[in-house]
Image (cartoon, rainbow, N blue to C red):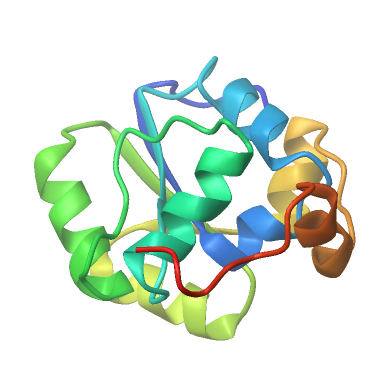
Length: 137
């Protein structure tokens, strides 16, 4: 991704991250032109942690037990950068970004601008090697 300020905090909605063919590579790439990058989701913490751990994604922040709107507000107050960009998948994510003062970027547009490959969300889960567990705390 080129152009604009690199003094940026970038938040991926978990479903947007799952839409990428290589989410770990995209995350590592984003670190080259952002100050902070992390994941927000309404999913339980262990779901986000399990997904990122399997793909060796190191987050600067994550939702924790909070919902997305509270997470975005907290991240914005804790990470003082010129821009706060939320990568999401739908109009609900776009509305949430507007409500919390974040710029919104649809995952397809982010992938196109950054040169990331989109994949099938179901294949992305299967490609991690292990089945997703919902009992892992």
